Amino acid sequence: MSKPLINPARFRAGRPPFRAWLKKTRYLLLGKEADKGLLFRVMIYLILIDTAYIYLNPLFYMITSMVKNSADLLDPSVRWIPREIFTGTLTDAWIHVRFPQAFTISLLLSTSVALLQTLSCAVAGYALARLDIPFKSFWFFCLLLTFVVPPQVIILPNLIAASQIFHVMKTYYPIIVPALFGHGLKGALFVIIYRQFFSTQPKELEEAARMDGAGVLRVFTRVMLPLARPAILVVFLFSFVWTWNDYYTPGMYMGGSKSLPLSLGITQISAQLAAQAGESGPSLFDEPIKMAGAFLIILPPLVLYLFAQRWFIEGVERTGLVE
Image 1 (tube, helix red, strand yellow):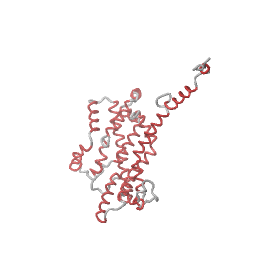
Image 2 (cartoon, rainbow, N blue to C red):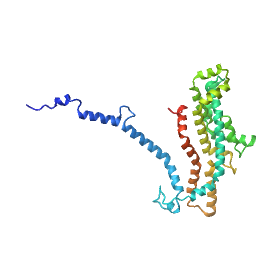
Image 3 (cartoon, rainbow, N blue to C red):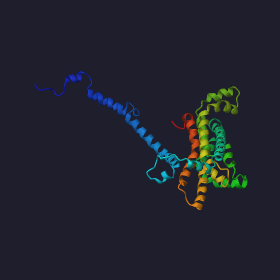
Image 4 (cartoon, rainbow, N blue to C red):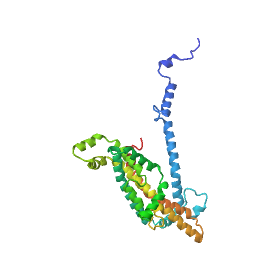
């Protein structure tokens, strides 16, 4: 009698071991859900590492270049890690950009613009979200229009008005005053953030406050504004960082002034290095000094983000900017 090809005892004992191992391996690699498997997680980490490398590579190159001495700069084998930490380049950049004065100007300017935009855009966003105002759709369309029109298109009439009508060239007023009216840098985007946040709040809160005799201003300041802390934090940080890094607007209005913000430090360094090159020729440290100046400019926003990152991410999630 010949031996059967399939052993019946194998099926009587339960599921075949190979099929169980295959199923376990499949769950391990693919997961019970599409985003729970090992392959999906490995792919996510590869994408995150690749994206982080793309963004951080210039920053690492900037830091390593500004701490190299002359021997490391001339040695092609030294690319990332210098043999010795040299701080002379950073000291020269500190002097060229007049860091204490420029830092104070940037801090005061960015804080003023951020506070004014945080308040004025909150008022505009609440009005567009909850109040019955005439031609609301038209005003919102105009708001979107100001958001999509680049500032380079309207800079010429603004310069003429600032120089010939208001006589405020080489001052900070052309940067601060528009923020008081919710215009300024990215003001339309901040109004949209507030409008989105206030639109999601329940109407019963306003109705209860009005039944207690509260007017529109009191409802806004006592009921709605305290609820808008996530949106306030997001708008303040966005406005502060954008104003801090803004190179274009101060460059147009404050050209020739001696009191420049930190964002124009690269221009100061380039002008001073060009003058030195005209007298004594180019230096080996010209590019490292520019990179050290750029590092000094971006250092304060990086420190701010490190401390406020948790509240910033929570605010972005709660305002509906991301899902």
